[in-house]
Image (cartoon, rainbow, N blue to C red):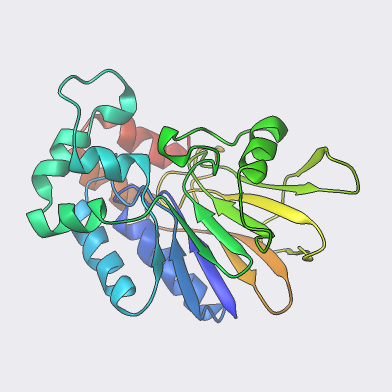
Length: 249
């Protein structure tokens, strides 16, 4: 089975549609969305409509911290990440907020575990941005059957694996190149961001996991980032979020 892994869409409908089209062209048979469906971007309603349609077709979904904030926005804005939560909350219908609220923090499917941030206390939204954090996330997985942990949150594409010893190794993948991920090792991948790439390349990110061949391929997909940025400006959201889409930062 070819499993398309998408995370951190951030209400960017242009990027989501581009990634879905690309994944289908690559033979995706199952979709998994790893949280932060909304936040930052200008099209939370359109994105959730698309996501709910995927869910009705059997897609796997989990919750991200921005989804949580859209349901229960903070009374006081203290961070950049919180600055669009109230606006997003007001755009969504009550049924869409209930949909977000109902999503689990983690999901296991066979040898695969999905989590937005770290499997180590997932409700605390810890960033898996180095070997130490990746090791803590892998160590928190209770099921001995899980060999592949997939997450987002850090907006970068990275693969970690545990070799013969206890230490984790870090690998920065090349887009479009399949990487073997056999079951005799434990693997953790951060699959990047569909809707807000931050590595200086203004292209959407997702990954494809082939559960039969045991290979993961990280993908980069061009999309109309200028249309997504223009939508943010039209909505009256902070121009910073539009600027960073155009630069991929």
